[in-house]
Length: 310
Image (tube, rainbow, N blue to C red; front, side, top):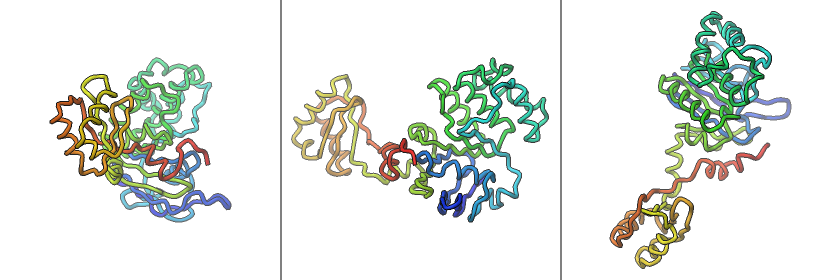
């Protein structure tokens, strides 16, 4: 299954929100839709789901406009939309029925999903009695209630502590392995980097970067390496490197970091030579790895701070 967004434009009055947005998402991967708050991510999602009509352009699923196919969507919105005073089991039955499920099947499926998310004890409670993180898990379970083929998660880690975030990642990874299409929208770069295979970066309604994340990182200079000593004395490692004249000739700059000694080489071709000199000198290291730019660094370069609101 392949979802294609092709040259989509959308305006609200004089505000041109989406400008020729084009990307494709294959099933069986986690796809990151990233951008600052107000960049156009949520509008893109709503166009994909036919909640907003595009002014021009088209969204297709396996070549057929999504308005003409019966694919099941699962949507976790950034703004939560459940009933705070209603029992969760009853809400699942009601929402499942709206999606074409039998109420009993929706209850059974919902309870099983909550058990997976370690929230089964809340099945018969009212939503407003739960913490924000547990409400988020309820919302996720309801998004997956009808076993959707296309799953769109808008800021899914909002309100989750590290333990519950790990549960969410485990569940969504399982969905990806099952071959479902998962679109993950966020301005939290760390979660996207850990979770997504491919990304689409939107800024002010335009795509500024799109493609496989690993391939994107490989387009950046690979002349920085992190050297971690076999021991705790990182400063001593730097002194030893400074004591090797041949190594100093290869190095443009170095700095001690909490992880180890970060070295910038004059050329990326010098990595092997530096490692050989370190080995010959008898310096014991635990690891010698290329420092790739983080997704946040790439984002700041292309679109400015991820936390800046537009």
